[in-house]
Length: 166
Image (tube, rainbow, N blue to C red; front, side, top):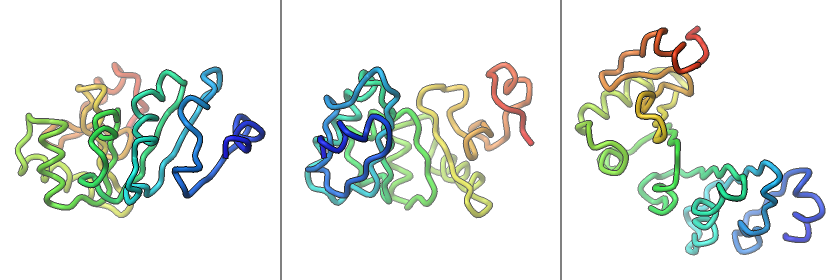
């Protein structure tokens, strides 16, 4: 896999279904913008190589994306090194864990209500921004909401240089 990366990876895309074959974070060229996507790897017993991308990837100019069917089964090292979380379908037990880990200011009922408000239409999703507390909760990417589920005002959106709501 490393040979393929050295030949094609810096100019294109590589895919692998085996984390043992995958490149390491040290193989990334920090002079390039790197995006690494791990899709449905939670069943892999050894997540150390993936965790390494989350711990050291930023220094290699890498954005790391981890797609998972379960927040609960995603390794804690990965969860703790995320800037953004996007949820489509949450299980009830996951809600309590998410509240404990990312936002202790909400009760389970408040978080559940907020989540449900964001998930009213097909393909909606609930985004949690762990970088910017002012824009912590969002419906989809660009619709920031407060903890009561109300859309933040257009004035705040302009101040934060976000696209208009439309």
